Every structure is written in structure tokens, then in C-alpha cells.
Length: 87
Image (cartoon, rainbow, N blue to C red; front, top):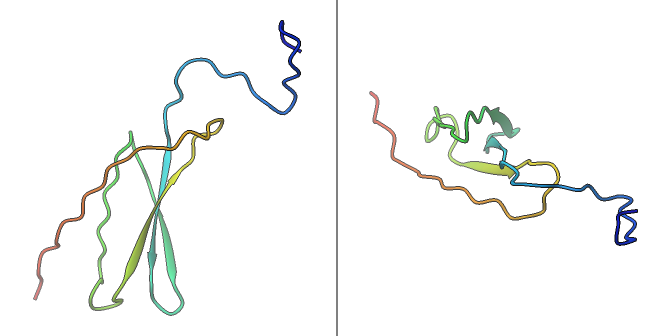
């Protein structure tokens, strides 16, 4: 119990700000689908969808907020740019 008499069993006391951590996954919509987990270093990651348009036609990028101890929605930004043509 805290000083005010509140029973905090099942809860954690958090002070200060929690840095948001993320996981990034790419699901290539092949048969069967392939899932790749990518490293996020200091809040930044880069994805190259090699084979998109030839080996597979579609992919899904999943951004997962993983900071333990918070239910606050995470904020992030992403940018999609066209790849270079080969051949």
C-alpha cells in the first residue's frame, strides 16, 4: 500500500519518461508468406524490399511499439520512396 492507502498490486510505479522502443516486421505476401524482423537502432530503420514486383507482388510493413510499462500510444514517422530500376 502507498501512503494514501491505495493497493497497487498488479501495477508498477513509474517515474519520468519512458523511451519508446519499436520492432519492425516485413511480411512478404508470398506462398507461404515470409516474415522478416528488422533491427531498429536508435529509433531508426531502413527497409529494402528486394524482389518486390518480381518474386512477390505485395508486402506489409508492421511497426510494433514494444515499451514495457506503458499503454500510451506511440508516435512514429515513416517514408516510402521508389526503388531504383534494375535491368
